[in-house]
Figure 1 (cartoon, rainbow, N blue to C red):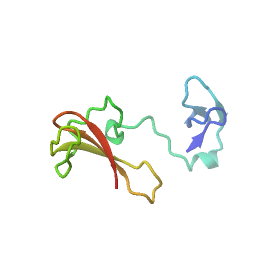
Figure 2 (figure 1 turned 120 degrees about the vertical axis):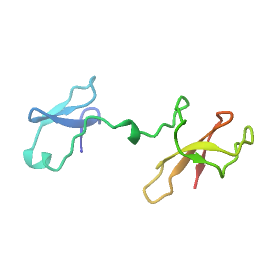
Figure 3 (figure 1 turned 30 degrees about the horizontal axis):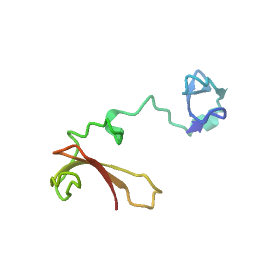
Length: 109
């Protein structure tokens, strides 16, 4: 993966040169064909690869944890997602949303 020297955004190969993916930047650099063979460019992530952790995130349909208790209403089931928020050698963080009241919290394992 190559990053733009101007803004730090990811660059993709287009027409023999590397182009910044940030529309406001427009940075380019020459593409080294030997180096380009080492890179894999993708258009975008699919929805299944994105972990929603924002307040507006719709957790419905995500896996359910039945071994948790909501601190807000005491309900015993919540949807959850897992995200690696620290270094690779640290355990991931679990984000929960209560199935009853919608209260959100996280657990660090």
